[in-house]
Image (cartoon, rainbow, N blue to C red; front, side, top):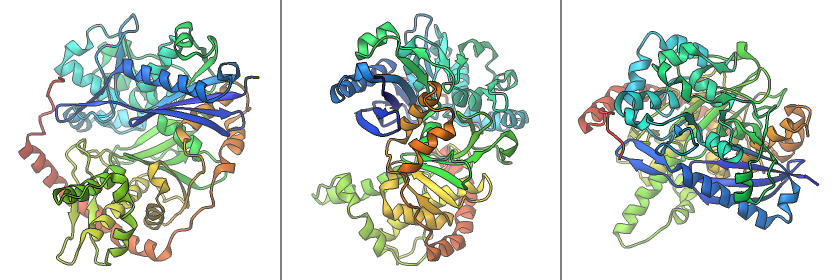
Length: 525
């Protein structure tokens, strides 16, 4: 009996394969750490072949954990980290290494294009702001500064598209990635005007066919079957980009509810559902993303802050470094056990933290590659606990900043990502948003969302709404209401948070110029 769906989620940190029964119950999960490397100050790349090999490893290990998986698998669905540029030649061999969403080499190009009058029309079509992480600016950087990198390239993929090619031999991408980068979200097709504005007409041939996994699938190739041990001909579904799949698995699409969805991991993604093209709200700053959902006429609007829990990692590394200097070794997990204690030590004297700790700067709700983190309001009365509290508050304010750019704050936010396990962060986030916070017992929301697309594609469910009723709603924990006292405190502080980040912008640019990071024309190593 074919009673198992496999969802592959190739993320930035981990590559996972997750098995679900047809009703959405998770049966087993295997994972391997992902591997990528820095290039100079602002580049970030990944080996294509290793990514496929690591994915195969998770599928082989999954077979070892589930009895007769080859005889039971009904379909395989794949999603993965978004943005970036992964190229292959006509024979299907990698052309160089894959550029990740972390890569900021195209920042100067983005700054120049955003200043041009044509960006308003590009934004109206894609519904998405330009950022250095996107494939369009990255291809433009290669064309302008390293044309040798394009030699022999026949197709430009994203991470999940590369895996889908290895699974099926089909060169394709999904509607979400294709349209927020190169297309018209209303038509769900590439836009010649957008491609022309990006200066990529001569590279248009690199863009693969757009296929919708909710209605289309292809068979597992003989070569992929031999590598994975799964039967040739097994239906393979190209999922949407990982944030869409995670939003789907976490419950953003839940007709009749006023919910937002936040994924708070290394980066932060904050989403509202638009029930039609006319419901999409585009902002004057030309930022955020509009992504097609695997439901006709439905979109996810998103604002993404570049660094979320990376800021917590930084403050813990800061503490760990001080302790190490005194001969005391503490792991990150050791230090995490002290977070609640540090938070309880914080006093009520306001202290703000701008959480732009990433070297890539910020992309939502504003785009500035030179943005950097800072404490605002430090005094002699503040201690380390106040700094930890300010970092947590900063993540919550960044979330509110993102939601405010998309319209009214939602009544309930469904929270996913590693930070969802922190009761302290849930409480702080709920207060800053003035919203109840709801988490799910399902931890692998991205893989589940991909598998849900497969369930609809194969006709196991007649619609995504039917699938949500069985795959999503039963896994929700009770919503945690916002702390009213905290909500009042954050309402009073948020204007100062926003004012400080606006005031610091010229300071970031001056620091960037002084450090020499304004030169984005460094070549890959």
